Amino acid sequence: MQKKRTNSNRPDRIAAKVQMLVAQILRDNYGEDAILGGVSLVGAVAHGGLQFVRLYYYSRNEDISAVQRRLDEVTRTVRFELAARMNQKYVPDIRFEYDDTLERASRIDELLGQIANES
Image (cartoon, rainbow, N blue to C red):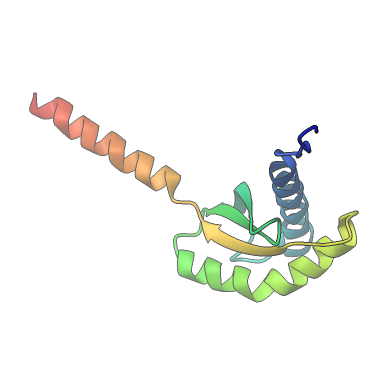
């Protein structure tokens, strides 16, 4: 008996599609918003058997808590618009999470510079 083949990259494809569509929705509907205007989606990961997608974002706004609150406020509207744009029977829930990779990389560079100066 042959083992059933699974499409293991489907979660990645769904997450990428959701990321692209949500980025378009944010640009189209909230591009002029003072808080959300500087938000960039930098990654997406599907979880829970494709029940939800975690969207990672970066913002030029220094008040990340205000950005997160605003994203939480518009999530329902964004998901409704996402359902209209996706060609799927089921639309996953979306959750926004701040990606602090740039800050951590900057801090590492700063520490490495201090070590180099001490040597």
